[in-house]
Length: 102
Image: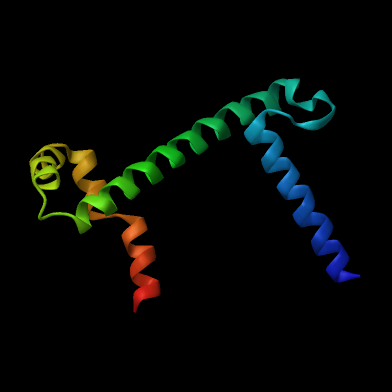
C-alpha cells in the first residue's frame, strides 16, 4: 500500500512539474490568478537556475582548459565582474564532480 501511495505521489509531482514547465497544467487551473502568479514566479526561478547551470558548465570547461589562450583571455574578464567571479569560485558543477572523484 505504501509503495503504491509513493508511486502516485511521485507521478503527481512529476506531472505538476511537467505542467508548470510546459504551461500545460491540466483543467485550465493555471488561469486562476494566484496559481498564475506562482507559475510565473516559478518559471522565472527555473530560468535563473538554467542560466546558472549553463554558466557553471562553461566555467567548468574554462577551469579545465586554463592553459589555452581562449581561457587565459577570459579569466581577467571574469575576475572583473563580482557576480561572475563569485560564480567561478563557487562552481557547484565542479563541487559535484569532485564528490564523485574522491
